[in-house]
Amino acid sequence: MKLHEYQSKRLFAVHGVPIPRGDVATTAQGAGRIAEEMRGPVVVKSQVLVGGRGKAGGIRLAQTPAEAVEMAEAILSLEIKGLPVRKVLVDEAADIQTEIYLGIVVDRANRRAVMMASSEGGVEIEEVARTKPDAIKKVSIDPFLGLRGYQTLGLAKGIGLTEEHTRAFGRIAQGLYKAFQAYDASLAEINPLVVTGDGKLLAVDGKMVIDDNGLFRHPDLAEMRDVDEETPTEQQAREAGLSYVQLEGEIGCMVNGAGLAMATMDIIKHFGGAPANFLDIGGGAKAERVATALRLILEDPNVRAVLFNVFGGITRCDEVAKGILTAFEEVKPTVPLVARLVGTNEAEGRELLNQSEYRLVTATTLAEAAQKAVAAARGELSA
Image 1 (cartoon, rainbow, N blue to C red):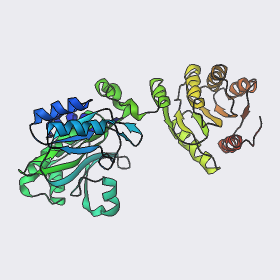
Image 2 (spheres, rainbow, N blue to C red):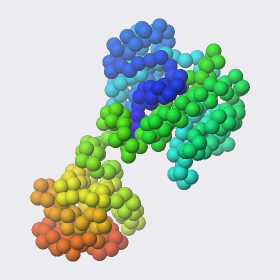
Image 3 (cartoon, rainbow, N blue to C red):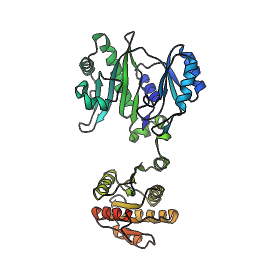
Image 4 (tube, rainbow, N blue to C red):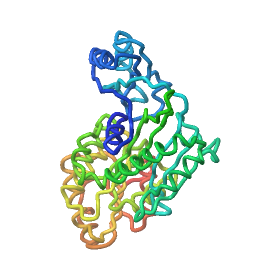
């Protein structure tokens, strides 16, 4: 789950990271009132969960409260990369002398968090990695020892910070790591972390991505979710406890298990098709949940065929078949359907599906199922 800039920076501040004075407004007049309180130049920043806000006109400098009202009104009318701007953050403008990147991500290969720093702040770190990889300094953090002082000192020296700033940099790095841990984040970054004209370090922008699997420990963070980022179908899937991501293909996929779902998508592509979604119904899905999943797939107007790929380990194939048939009664599918049920009670599951009056064919292997689904989406397969 992604957090907005203002949400991320507030969480950083709880752990000692210095951030500019500022507040959030949902109206232009509200932005003007915040600017009056700042008593000086402010930056009006759109709060949307995409990059490139500045290039899209979503970040503007205002010298007066009247200008802040004007800027906020313009920004709140924008739609940036398909997302409407509903809020603006009005921050006190900083006297920026130097811009630094500081972030933490999970290195899954090494099973540790990695802190990265670069003197090339203010731009996307992916671009820095592509054009100037030597400008990024990294340290791997031992989960039992935590972030050590010598590591932050090494990062500070590696990016060319002067001695007068290394202690403040170390405190900010420690605060960022504490926030990363405290909120079960998979990413936490400050870009840019700036050195101001009076020699202070300030986090003028921030970003956090929270691991969805840890949200049960953070109900307060779960309430911060921006539903504009999700399609209506993705929102329904989340509320139903399903792992669903909408894609742009024509073959709907319903699979139990994330790894099997990825393999299913890959083999569809291998045989010339395109998956319409990633959908994992989970290891113990019952008929009602399967029916919900199928309804979500069939609500996508781009879907021209559906592939069911179920391995019955924890999940029973007959339960999945019942769910499919229940959904058929409610949704009345008009697209061809291909089912591969393998594992616990697979014979019973196949028998239930074979009794269906809908355009459904079965397959015994994943390759066979994918080929039939691709042919069905092209109108080349009959039940």
